[in-house]
Image (cartoon, rainbow, N blue to C red):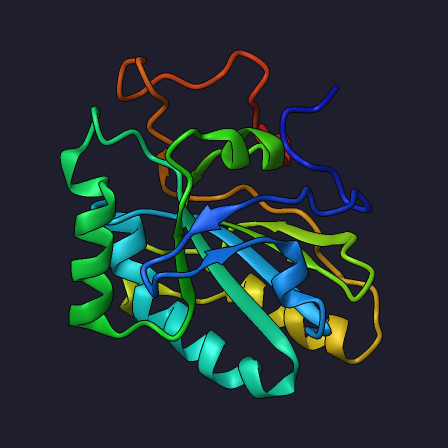
Amino acid sequence: MAFTLQIGDKAPDFSAPATDGKTYSLADFKDAKVLVVFFTCNHCPFVIGSDEVTRRTVERFKDKGVAFIGINSNSEKTHQTDDFDHMVERMKEHKFPWIYARDKSQEVALAYGALRTPHFYVFDEERKLVYTGRGVDNPRDESQVTVNDLDRALEEVLAGKPVSTPMTNPIGCNVKWEGKDAHWMPAEACDLVPKSE
């Protein structure tokens, strides 16, 4: 049994309170042609370094029927700045164009098999997984980005094509699991794409 959702898997349902005061589940996105669920947080330099790239992606695709929800599953015991109050502050400050929800129990991160922040999952109209992995090839430094895998996956899905590269390794900090060392990863968690020698 793979830790992370595999291509073709159905999106697991969730219930997560967001910074806008609402609680979201899959049903809230039923009208979206494509749903992007991504695991993110408040403090990770890879998230902070790529937030504006993600913003441009959301702004480019949200009028084409793509919905976006960012989920913060990090333990606030590991990083207190990942708590809900800091999420609300961050959204007030940056006004990101996506929904920002809290997964305090970490059940959503486990259901999806989130590995890092950020880690993106793209689901088609039937809510089957068509892409998982990184957003871009250099999330920490926007000036060094040469490949935008998320944009390409969304373009291909909306054009009715199969995603040419459906799986990449997410690049970022590992999810901060409750009660564990900051760098702990579940034993069954592994790279989505084996690294070539």
